[in-house]
Length: 497
Ligand code: NAP
Image (cartoon, rainbow, N blue to C red):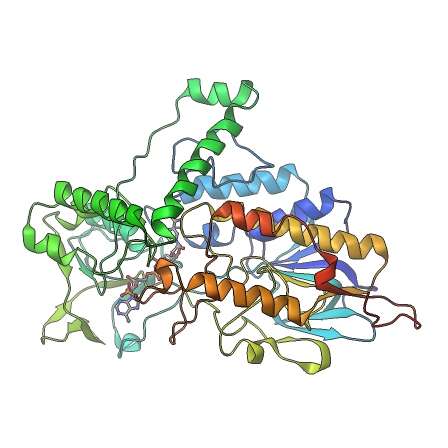
């Protein structure tokens, strides 16, 4: 073991979630926190997604911590580099950098009932023990190559959107982009500026809404810096606007038709060619897959050097992409904007709880948790962006902060109370999950399209079926009636309180 005694809290991952958790725990008086990060720098998804055009499609005023507002955002929707600078600054300002150990790839978590401690094992270092563990490794951290035959056969350069090769010079190159999701629609407009040709392979068109990105002038920044409450007001307005969107995005309502009408109008205004418009028109309810926010994608697709290919891909060949009608599109480079391996059914590393139970086995039919953060039989283990915490219409950071507050309160209770652990009651978890799944049945995500939100048999372990405000309310306080408090005294051990 690299530490003498157990840590109070081990946090896995130094992205927005891990950094935020470390900050809030320290502010709550829990100082003995170590963050284990597999990479050599902090930032999570914003460290990894550095493809050209990478930006957040949620306004920065809302895509930031409420406890670390930033009056300096340069534009409405900031790019990945600026967001990464923000995370760096927040971590430095709150004194958590020295709490992070880099180059620490967790390979497993095991709970020991007698001591009430978790053991974290690592790829290369000695194990570490901790009383509480926060799994903050993020659902979108492992890039996924598509299950297309021949992916390994390609002799040219292959680049995934989340592992960009900045040394590769696209100037004059023939490029294929596979995928047309949130990443692709940001990449394509940048590639067409440099490459000789860009062929975009689309399997399913998405609903695209315009995104008006304005620079924040010095006057506005001055107001944010100096006028108390100005930034809080801006955030509240963005928040309210996004909450309203839920009515058309989370559920299939008349407002969904309005969202679709706006997207159709946007398509009509930006694309003259009726056949291309038809190819780009989705056949599912808006919101079922993630809405795409961009005003640059459709114009880029119509650039002279760009082409949309809608024939299904048959295989990847050594020289390019073969589509089912028999054409081989020969290219120098394939950009895979094909998303991430999302753990909807398993865990990123083995997690062994009470009595040797294995979380991946319990989640084999689809992940579930109590209020997205805790699982019965895994005491003092918490997840950020755990099951059913995904937003479809509002800032992920609103959801994240609510989870961090809940986890901080629970860990604070254990530390202050001198308890061994909190273990959520199975019946509380099951009741919660039954309600979530019932509510999900009425949402657009479960209305028939295929997306990364669902398992192959249609189980939704990803999204929260409601307003962000409802999610925040559900996380507002730790209800001890839903937990077993495990204490050390022999007379009370494993007592049900
Ligand atoms: P994604 O949304 O999962 O999109 C993957 C794309 O690859 C889809 O168009 C998919 O087509 C296509 N694809 C996958 N396998 C394929 C195959 N075998 N053959 C052909 N096409 C295939 O991935 P992403 O665009 O990287 O986005 C993932 C998530 O990251 C988003 O949902 C969002 O949460 C987050 N993100 C956020 C931002 C932001 O601005 N906040 C930006 C980028 C990403 P189908 O649609 O047919 O499956």
